[in-house]
Picture 1 (cartoon, rainbow, N blue to C red):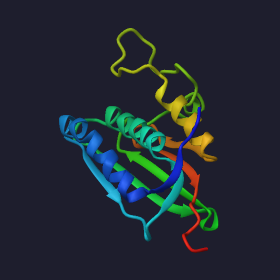
Picture 2 (tube, helix red, strand yellow):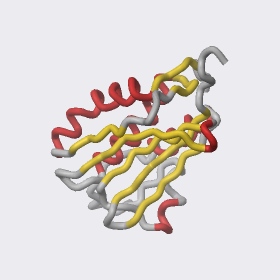
Picture 3 (tube, rainbow, N blue to C red):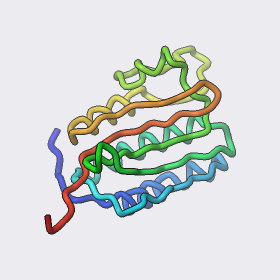
Picture 4 (cartoon, one colour):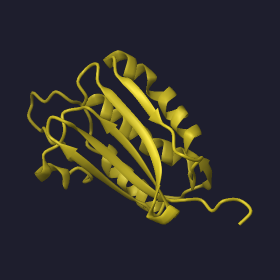
Length: 163
């Protein structure tokens, strides 16, 4: 898979992602909060692929959060300013610790029963992992059953212009 790398400003990408999921948010009566970074953050990335990762994470957060919940999108510097950490947090159902390691494998759905409540192919997180890793980053989850989840990924920060 080939990446078309360019400087991507995260606040602009966040607004685009929010516009893309607005109908999903409204249908479930969710609130989306975009927490601004302390400074404008830019990464070198394939804009379309990075948007795809954000949309996968946002769609999952919306899907697995009870109606009227809250989804938060944020970014901050990490690793001494060399990385940017992007996070999508929700007030959803959460994920048991023993299930968290399985999440990023292809075709994995935690509820495989015929009466499962949530639709999907089980490919979104596996694809997101592959895309983040192609960008030189990592992806993970912090979650607690009944309290929600935070899916996060890190990417190398773009070198500031003029340096």
